[in-house]
Image (tube, rainbow, N blue to C red; front, side, top):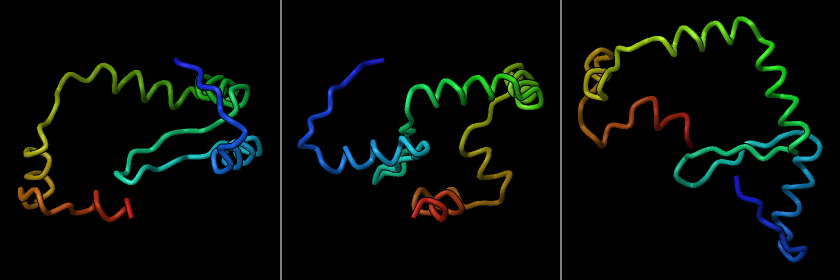
Amino acid sequence: MKTVIISTRARRLAALLKEAQRGGLILRSPDGREFILAEIDDFNREIELTRKNKKLMKLLDERGKQTKTYTAAEVRAKLGLSSSPNNRGARGAGRR
């Protein structure tokens, strides 16, 4: 992981960092990708708590053992969705 020094002149970013001190933030880019902005100590605590979540760890272990994969076309067919690339369906609905 790379460390980037933030200028005191970057006011919007400084405001986001201040807000992240009160609790982590999810930042969403214009293309819908999401990123976490959290103070490292808080983030380490979240990782620790997540690792102690036995139900979640069991689920992740089970999913990690799965070998079957599906293509996007197979998933669309199973869900009865159009194969048109312009049909964003449910995926596009939640990203606005």
